[in-house]
Image (cartoon, rainbow over all chains, first blue to last red):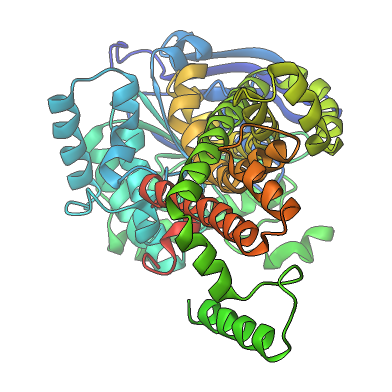
Length: 273
Length: 248
């Protein structure tokens, strides 16, 4: 991470994205993310939070506006390997062992074998999967697969970790455990994280800031700073301040026109009015 | 195996019981006897024909794989060319056997390889193309995020992903190549070819020997299929179709 600490890791100004279908997915997004921050993007389905993540990662191009990552264009940042990406499904390659999945980005970066091997060991230790080096992805549970995916994303020390609902497909208990692990990994790797989620408690528990988005067109409705003390743990979820912040995010979502009250899709009937 | 032996037993019993004429259906024991009497010669014929089939298989399959790679890389050109490929496949390729015999010469093994190759091309091309393109879009995005180029994406994602599909095509092609070579030989070829031998035996009313030739051709076809299936097992043990229930 060569960027001086006084600059933003991500800086977006007047960002707009319209699709050819005429849908405006994002409108006038201004957001700065500082080094070491953990920023969650939350909002109802179709509010453009995943689109925003993809624009930051240079996977799609904005219609107008500017994205700077470590002071460079998003495109240059991608070429410089500044992004580690984790999707909702782990996207592991079945034809590679766990260790070789983690080492794929390192192979592409032409690291030598000894260095790759060392780093893969470190990363698997970090996500608590030591001993699974030669397992195949399909032999692991969903939560373990996602941890391999995180290890792979962090293996080459990217400046920015982009996570698109990484725990969305996991059960509640696995999700809470992985939330704890993710905070520990974030603390150990000192990386900056942008995290898309549907879950209000998850966003509050993990983040230093929660960006609440509203749909059609996708705008930033409110940015809520999460002042819960670090490091966080199981007790954090029982603090009064935690519930206050959950309520604040929920109200901001309601005010923004989204009624996504949390983690389930059972709210669709309420969403009609 | 048990079913196979029962089938042969039933065949033997019924042909004996009803005294079926040899030109209709010879007894398995007669066929086996005919093969045994002439095993060295028939085996050589079989090897000759199998070589033609193998040559056609290698040629047609390589062209099929290469075409699939090019069609994936140049998607727009691929879309434009696909209807022609499908139309070409609808042509009864076997009907071209007299033509290729004419082109390359009746005794030139390449005239049979050409037929086998054309038969192999389409199933390998279509299946490989499917494997190369049915890739999780996220894994392509992931490769983009590593700033990986086209060649890396093919090498690390598209090609490994296509292997199980490609082997499906290759297994079909293995069987087709033997059929192509034999049928090519029916329209003329050297006397040491299995297809020519089968044809001559039927014309000489030597039906047990003709059936022995057919059985040998099937054996080569099955063995070839088995070899390709084994190669598949060895190279794509990670594929869902190969792993069975072991990993679950």
